[in-house]
Length: 179
Length: 142
Image 1 (cartoon, rainbow over the protein chains, first blue to last red):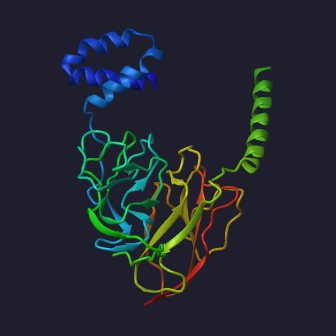
Image 2: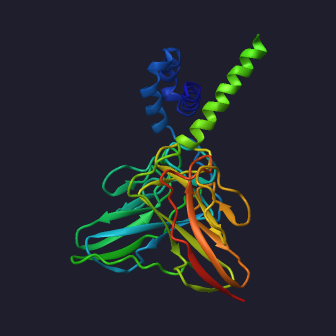
Image 3: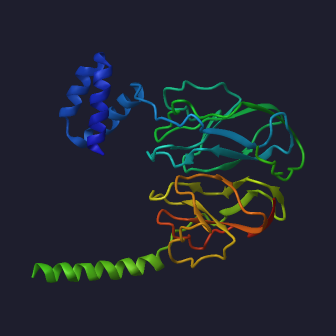
């Protein structure tokens, strides 16, 4: 792990001349002192994005675009095609983990996906979730992130769908025929 | 001397390994559930079809990844549950999704078939308690 960090540091030093002096100074520090500065450098310096096959895609299997949902708590099922699911931190090729973007545009695709109430992370490798949203119109979009939460290249993301949440009794999830 | 130590060590490892293989099957969250989202039980399909694999509470991880509360899917086609304390066989009746896939395209000969999901850990050994879906029956039309 420390050697990987050092590689990252060296890589970021190469890409960011301004930070080179700082990074070089850090490589002389004892290993245990690296963690925080290395993480910062890695987050700031764009690194090559993980590759994804061209035919990989994700989609929201439930709910459907335009759906009116009764009950403010509902299940969202993540569809993943020609691609695998892996927890955050796992670097297996052609895998990633899901993020749901709620009521927000796509974030920058060359850096880690933000982690807040509009960008939900599923770093355990979950393939579904229960969402609770206030009544009204909401948009949902899935975006895969790699081991470090950075979208793949090309990005593996779903269509952005719109649902209307109405107060009331929850309804059962009805499976729809996959295309 | 060295060889004797090595042998003793190997024997100990083998014993430990044997013991942990049965005693230490992985756990999943108590309310975790595996289910076949599609096709529904009793469905009739024509030609190739997609199977969508559902997992509630818990995560998917590729085979070989050691991470608590995760596993990967296996689809049993026309087969009974295999022994739950050893790796799931890998053959045409026991399909492995070791990349962490959650859906698969199946092409089965016309007739009635059964499908059942069984989650397993990084070594393809089912969890304890095992996480298996209901076994469903479908009919494939020619």
